[in-house]
Image 1: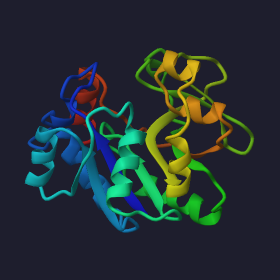
Image 2: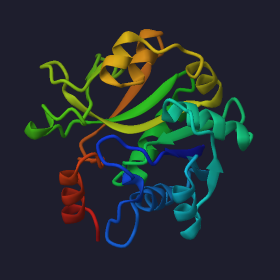
Image 3: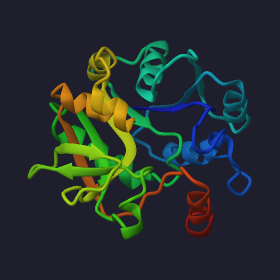
Image 4: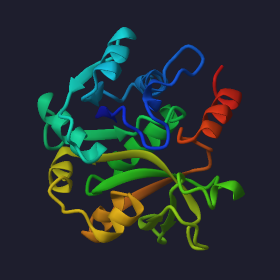
Length: 234
């Protein structure tokens, strides 16, 4: 299993957030070092087109893959990076969003074990049952509806009563699945909500959701930074 963290500098809500200082380490460094602890990963990379991010990752000893500037999303950047390091069709790729500094070894193990137990899964991701009241109307937090077998039925930034889970920004798929995903055309729902996983669902890719009760947080607002510093940095 290979880990790829696609990272860009131009974030709409928090410009240059990948380089935000979180107690003497950047956000991208916090994400990288947390993921790096998992021994199931053969190798971990940051995929970026930005020199500032590249220089920062190299400064703490991380691996960087240079990618093109004009990618529309992290999946496209992941695909280019996977080709540059010759990842094989049956290899598992872990795509971790660069604003997820609380993802830990337990989360990765949950995803990996589901893939290991059922090699026919298209995509595996993580959802949390710890959906708090103040998360419901927060559009930066993606809510998820599952069926009886824990496959995703819907993802939405808006709150609906049937959306019981909080989606965490980490995906796993085999390289041959990634090859198919990047050839799908954007859909109307995806463009409206800015959620690429809606494109996958609408093209009949099954997304298996592994449930945790942990409250993983992503960094999307200044309030998220405050919460992270108060609760997660040791």
